[in-house]
Length: 229
Image (cartoon, rainbow, N blue to C red; front, side, top):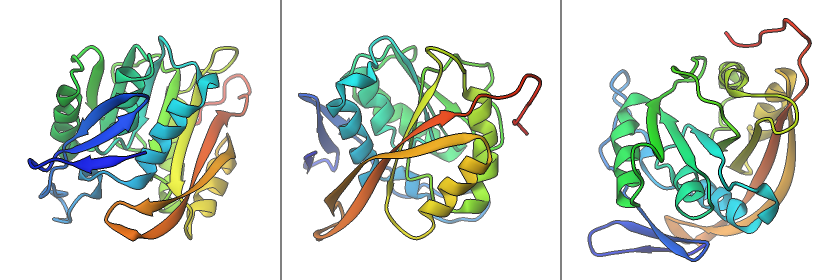
């Protein structure tokens, strides 16, 4: 998936025959810690996930409601609506990243109905509730200690049965990813690797790294079981 940078610093990404704009917002910080939020930049895993969504015709995104968890710049969710036929995306992340998500949705011509930007922190539930067909995640498998609260949020989004929710995640293959996946499995999710690719790094094109795409499904819950926090 090709990424080019224009004179104004906007990144342009080709997805399924269309060019999407991605605006990175330098200087976005966590108000509590003062640390820069890496979600304000475009990362390789979101490119890998968007490419997988575009290449796998079996995903049938047409008409779907897609929710992206930890969306960052929102590329996969925006691509789902702008390029791949999804009816709506809900782009979620921490509050400091929401203006950037809205700016990227606007830059690609998506209305507020087509791209709903909301705050959603792991361990919390989305209000008001949304019936979600597809959950997207990229670069969220960092810290195994974060996975129980993320799993609780996912359980609140998931629908079981025929036509229920399915999840797609992409991550760089690195230390700690398998530990994160193991915790998600302990908390009721089946996680299967479906694709692995090697690609150049955006910020150092002479270096490459391996990235994997995973399919997530929830194991059938027993009646009365509530795994949300």
